[in-house]
Length: 145
Image 1 (spheres, helix red, strand yellow):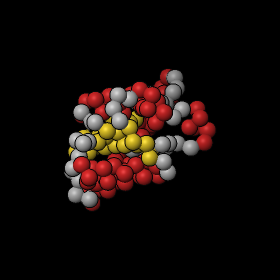
Image 2 (spheres, one colour):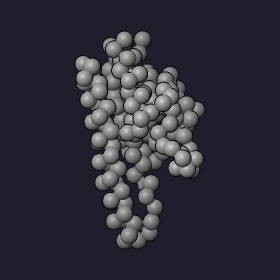
Image 3 (tube, helix red, strand yellow):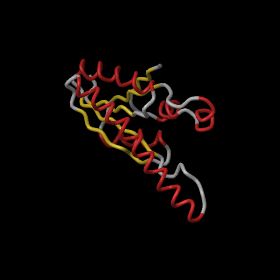
Image 4 (tube, helix red, strand yellow):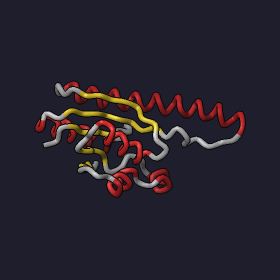
């Protein structure tokens, strides 16, 4: 039924729960799996020389965090004998990065956590999952922690 599953990760415990559900679906349907971590390349704001230094530091830290989350997720799929591709994606809006990737890889199911961030940061940034749900044109399995 589902030939290609896209699993966006962010290193949160909820994303970990989503990985477990995606593994079960992939095993049941013999699905291909793509894992992504979306980085907003312009999340850091500043002006002048301090901006360029801060931007470089931010991108370096964000990429390291992304690679760690992707490697953890990828290993979970490999441990279950599921072939998986993974990549870090840049997107000005995280939900758009997820949906654009889903379209480009031909995903027919998204499996993601209900939330990744907590507290004030989540209130300020809004819920990526809610934005994905309101703009998606494919089924989305939302996994709660």
